[in-house]
Image (cartoon, rainbow, N blue to C red; front, side):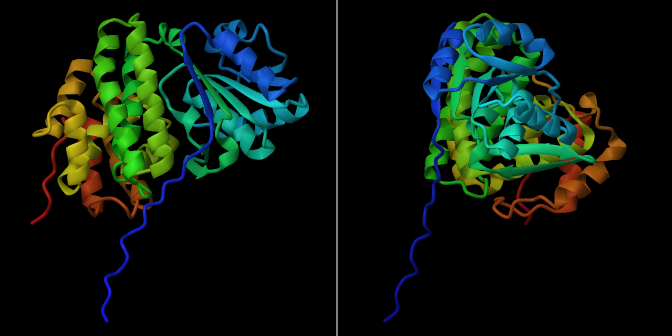
Length: 365
């Protein structure tokens, strides 16, 4: 007797983490969580620009040493140095205060030492909610997944975002949005991660224009943190899709500004993939309030935010596009909803480099 094949299994892996949301509460929450974890020798990881903020937060905790050599994309020498600092000072906990690069440095130390991380984000990078690490060496960014690098605790404080410049608020927020959108076609995408991503898009799309208009809108800052966290958790469950593969390659090879690169690339990947991803298009349209024209709604959001559009403005030249396309071709996820040729990448990266508007790219035939 013929039987039907079993339905495809749904696999969703969640990651255990304690998360606190507040406003003006970081100093209290960090001290309380470090006491709860029983840590006595904390390595504080904070870039020089965040040193004053970090020291204010750390007044009530046992800081054994401070590591300040934070750089974008976590160069291999930074990874080695932060790990050595943790061992030299016999740290029992890593406290990161800063953006994605700072969280990334803490993850590099956790990867080799196994020490727990307490993360206090000051941007909307989302790295604090994922088990993904990245280290750059010789122009190549290696990434991986390891539960050791997932921060044990995240302390979100909306008041820490009030001094974030408008441009960085926008690009960092669009990086968070990219976590959501890319989750709909990433290798392990599933109903749970997709639902989280949709709610993340709603929160981010509703609140980003508010902070672009008024950076002191504390409620909007709080709502962006919710959207950031939801997008990062969705990304952690679904994995890296085409958008993130492109951005990781470009960031490592050309040292481009991280969040701005994500902001520029997102509408181009969305325009390419949405014609072959009806579920993603439906979710995006519903989340942006325009079920009939989700891609146009995304471009409208970009226009309202005056978002960056050009990779050239970030340092990528026209002559780099062919080499960049060749680098990306080796990283195309098999889960992508449509096949990607080198010509496709040349066209996509060329438009992104020149700052041309993203296009809804029809399926061939």
